[in-house]
Length: 238
Image (cartoon, rainbow, N blue to C red; front, side, top):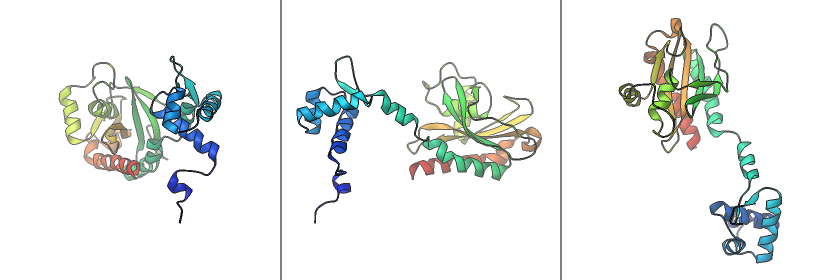
C-alpha cells in the first residue's frame, strides 16, 4: 500500500508543492538560481519561473548580490497571525481576576517601557484600569520590577531603576509587589511569564486599591500570579 500525501509531504498539487519547496529553501539561506536548483531538485527553468512569480507577489525578494531571499509579504502574513502568548493568557487573566477580585494584566518588555498586551478588568466597584496598548516606564511598579529582574541584561536599554539587591530578591522569590510606587493609592503584584524553554515572555500582574489589597499584597496574591504564569507556559507547551 502506497504512502498518503500527508506522509510524503505532498499535497498532490504540483505547482503548490514546488512553490513551497522554493520558499522552504530560501527560508534557510539566501539562494542564487543555481543554489535553488540544487536545494529543491527542480529543473532550472521551473525553479526560475516559480521564483520570479513568488517575487512578483512579494513572497520572495532579491538581496544586494541578486540572490533570492524571503519577501516582505511573508512578514506581513506573520504579523497578522494571532499572538500565541496573548491567546494563551486570555483565559488565565480571567481566572486570576476572578480568584483575586482585581484587574489582571499581561505586560511585555519593549526597550525602556512595558506594554500592556492583554487585560481582564474588574467588572464592578472601584478598579484600576490599564487599557491594552498602554505604555509604562520601567521605573516603577511590580511589573517593571519583574521584567527588569528576569530580562537578559542587554534586552532593556539604560540602567535599571531598581537596586541589584532588590532585583535579586525578586528573582529568588519569583514575584514582586509594589505599594503606591507607580500611582498613589494603588498596589500591585506581578510574576514572570516564561516560555517553555525558560525565556522571559512578559509579566502577569494584578493591580487594585491599597485599601483592598493591603500593604503586603504579595502575601495573598503571589501564589495565584505564579500559578497563572505557570498555566500560560503550560498552554504554550501543549
